[in-house]
Length: 139
Ligand code: CMP
Image 1 (cartoon, rainbow, N blue to C red):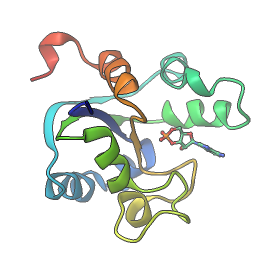
Image 2: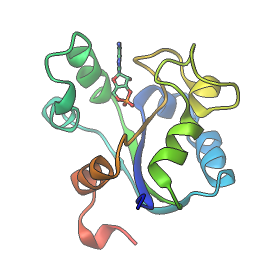
Image 3: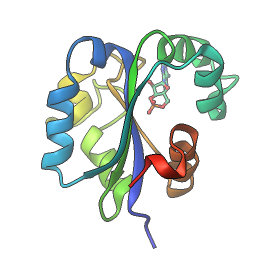
Image 4: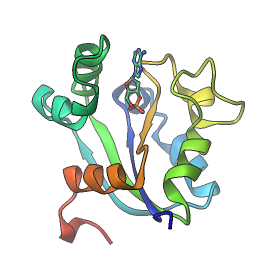
């Protein structure tokens, strides 16, 4: 059975460009409910840990430098079929390939600066939620 929670991050450039409100509106309109949320600036080591699955890929160093370059917002979202539905809502990793109306099409600048992250499986949604939030910080 599909899980009902996913983890997203509003990435540094989207936050700096003041796109948090518009992005959260799209998320709410799509029926997701916020169950936990925090502002945080990751260290390079923390970003490397979060994205460890990409270690060794050519974009890994840039990705972790970028993700630790400024504040982000980490959010746990709840909805039936959350992981899959959220990935549909944000669109393809590269905004050039993302469908019209998706969050990345609307707000991303490039594949590396793609506005938001979304968990890619129920298993990773749990791992990623545990990365940011203790049991008492989620509802
Ligand atoms: P995200 O959903 O946060 O998961 C991993 C991130 O790595 C991804 O979004 C992109 O921002 C980045 N990424 C993935 N593939 C590439 C690539 N080929 N070039 C640059 N960045 C990438």
